[in-house]
Length: 175
Image (cartoon, rainbow, N blue to C red):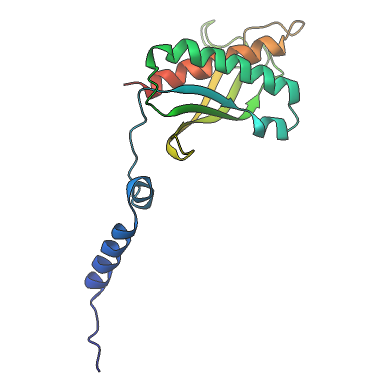
């Protein structure tokens, strides 16, 4: 039996068709780089700070989780539907600047930031009833700090950046 050589185009067309037949739903979207729209309604809300706890933030991570959950309920309360997926916010990084006022930031005409900025990194996940991730949205939120060096208030700033993160998430996800 002799095999005829396949052209490159025939080979790639067959390979693509074969892979498309194997992949369905979210797997197909990931395989071909397509993204599914993020759901607009959610059955419940949760916050995962396990990465922050693994980094040694302990009770501070719990403070962030509580502030984030409170803001999720406030910001997405009008988006409740018991048939929807669960909205889980996974927080993975927190940076709080030591420069809470003045100090090294360029100011033009008296405007601009009076201090450094805090940031919170993570992602929003739409999680289905069987625990499958239906959609994800990575996000980094940055917020200017307006505190004096003598009263840096790290816990208060953490609550502010968590609230800012969720409000920004609402703007990004809800069309």
